[in-house]
Image 1 (cartoon, helix red, strand yellow):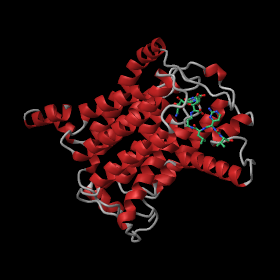
Image 2 (image 1 turned 120 degrees about the horizontal axis):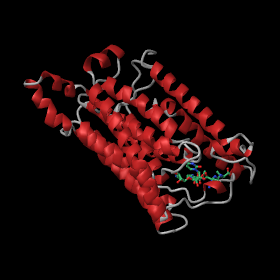
Image 3 (image 1 turned 90 degrees about the vertical axis):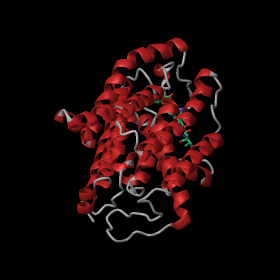
Image 4 (image 1 turned 180 degrees about the horizontal axis):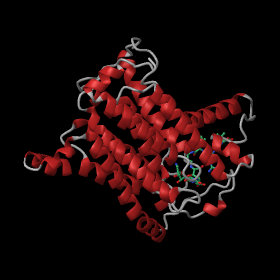
Length: 358
Ligand code: 57M
């Protein structure tokens, strides 16, 4: 909105020319989302407490009794901060921005419905695993179908470290892209089991992907770094900036000891959007490195469940996802969280280095 209102004034007042720059608007989108979430945070937490939207607990794992009743569904605060900020700073004539908003809201609704059943309706299990998976797949299918009709998109797959090798997946690209989005959504969800454990690496991954989106949308930089140039995609950097800002604001309250959890409302929507942004900038495979921490957590569950079934009840880890394993070994929660953050930063740096390694 500000872009549409203020940039035209640059003909008379040259200062407003800065609104043309995606970098400028992304930074302010970040700051706006951060300020909104910091300002609304305490009020929102009090409101959730009044509504009695406390976390429902399973007592089958590491002891989290002290966290009983912590308000959840903080994803609503994150979503509000992101959307207001994007509507203020984004170019609202850009189709990619609207598609990202559509994907974000779609995944948000799936997570919100699940939380609503669990937290508000006190329905123990929430949305069934099948129902949730189906909802995520439908959103992802819609997104990839629209994307493939847009200029600059193909069913070719970019392979990190290889300049020329771009296999064409043809129709298989569709289930592959769905897997990326749904996988990212569930990866963030599985990781969200300790204070700040999901949002910290999410901020790092979103910041990292914002670089790839910006580069892919910039003709000269994209050509220089030999990444595919996708016209107009750069504007999604503003959305990424807003995600980073809202994430930082949420972390302020979710940091150990957490005053609020994001709930599935947050983890499903933020994870799914992360996956979508990777698909958007054709860095689907690179997401494995960008979000390496989420991949490790997910693999720990796959291995644990697989081995448990094959061996008739034996376990590789004391408990999956991996953070539970360290908790049960007696590592203090804050130490696990910060070490996992360090890992996520290293993964993001490794991903960024691929811009030069090809
Ligand atoms: C949801 N939810 C947290 C909070 C958060 C297949 C299986 C591995 C699935 C997995 C699972 O259900 N994962 C997804 C994990 C829960 O957090 C809520 O859920 C939202 C995210 N969806 O925003 O609203 C609890 O996590 C803690 N928490 C914090 N700080 C935070 O900032 O401390 C969350 C956010 C909260 C709070 O205690 O209540 C969760 O862990 O339940 N299932 C599991 O993870 C279970 N693992 C398991 O069963 N492992 C077995 C399997 C794989 C064979 C094994 O290894 O033997 C664990 N879940 C629970 N207890 N509740 C087991 C222990």
